[in-house]
Every structure is written in structure tokens, then in C-alpha cells.
Amino acid sequence: MSSVEDFAARSVRIEDTPPPFREALLHRVDDRENIRHLIHSPAFATGKFRGLASLLCVTDKRWLIVLCEKDGSTTVGESTYDSILLVELTIILLYGQLKIDFEFKGEVRSTALQFNTVMKRDYLRAIQEVLTAFGGDEGEREKRDLRNSPILRDWPLKFRNMSILYAPENSSLLDGVQWTEVYGLFTGNCHRLRRCC
Image 1 (tube, rainbow, N blue to C red):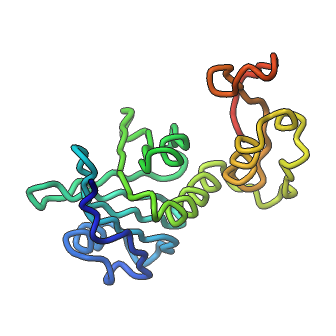
Image 2 (image 1 turned 180 degrees about the vertical axis):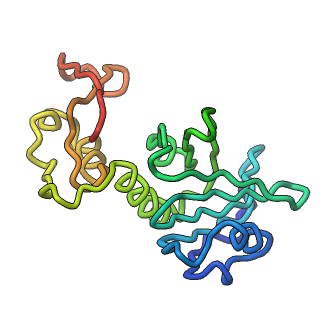
């Protein structure tokens, strides 16, 4: 049983976001930043799970995640793109959760938000920009076509398509992994996952 009444909504300006997110962002984002994505997800519950209301803000310089606690207070996680350590894509695709590990003042921190998977496409667009910015300035490199990658050639169609669709722009896949528990016993091939760069 789900208590979802409202779905996530996109905004163009900080002033269009609901309180208390608006106030939290107005103190942190200045006029010199170009806002690319503002996505607000209201609180929702499914079974015994309850997701907090949240807002994802992606600018040309950094990302911010604002969570609204049950008491109405807000918690903000933020970092520049060069401070990102890990963005977990599997949980975005399967569970509707965005989790980012990042470095802040010499410490490793992590922040996560839950979103209703009905609005997954908006979140995926925002994360695509985060991953592209995380990869650095790739403007000088020619656009890569992962469809002809020999690494992906023998992968199941669903995994191949997801890899092509969500890889950062102008990135190249260096290596990959196939676990027989996930992939099945149809092939003996096993690859290691190194990274996308």
C-alpha cells in the first residue's frame, strides 16, 4: 500500500520551490551559479518505508541535496564536482535512491535521497549532468560511441543498453564485470569492472 499523493516536480527558479527548501537554497546558491536542475520530491510512504521530502539542485558548479526532516528542519549535503568520490547508479535504477559519496574538509561524507520511481527520468537527466561534470571538461575530446565497444558486445541487451544510455558524455568504458549470479549461466565470460572515464 502506498501513500503517494504527489509526485516530484521540476522548478526553474529557487523562488518556485516550496518552503523550507527555498530558504535553504537561497542562503547557499548565489547569482553567479547557473541552475540546471531543481527537482522537489514530496515525502511518501510505501509499506513500512517512509521517504523524506527532498530537493535536488544541480548547478554548473556543484550539486546540493536538501532533506526535510520530520520536525521541519532541513539538512543539506553539497559539494563541487571535483569532490565527488562515488555516485551509485544501481540504486538509482532499481530502488529510486540517489546516493553520493564526497570529500568535505578532508573527511569522507555521504548523502542520499529517496524519490518515487515514477519521476526517475527527471532524476536520471540530472545525474547524467552530474556524471558528465564529475568526469571533467571533455569538450576537446570527440564524442564516443559505446555501441561498438568490444566490452559490451557479449553483454545481455538490457545491461548493454543501460551502459550506453547512462555513461557520461564523451566517456570510454575501460572494463566491465559480469557475475554469473546476475548474468546467468549462459556464458562463461567474466569481466572485471574498472571504471568509466
